[in-house]
Image 1 (tube, rainbow, N blue to C red):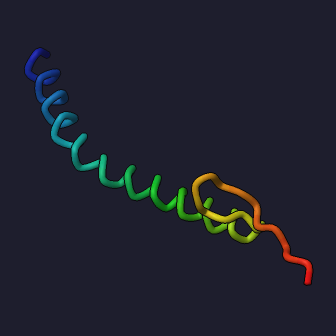
Image 2: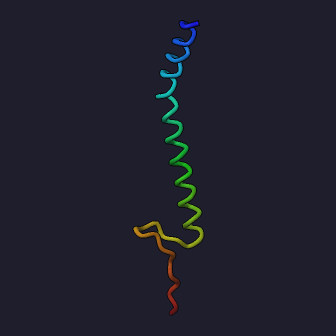
Image 3: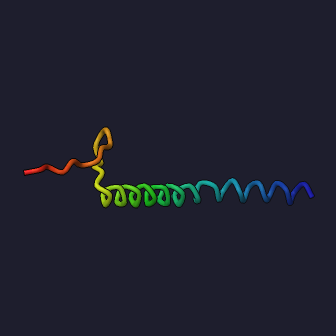
Length: 57
């Protein structure tokens, strides 16, 4: 029983670093999609985030 528990912990510890890259890519993709949608609604991606003003000529 103790050997089985040790084996499970070793496998999970080995898989954890492999999964972190996937989460990073998913978060980056979600951020890029959010930025794209904000740009569609007229927001600029500068610091601070502001909505573009239409110039009246």
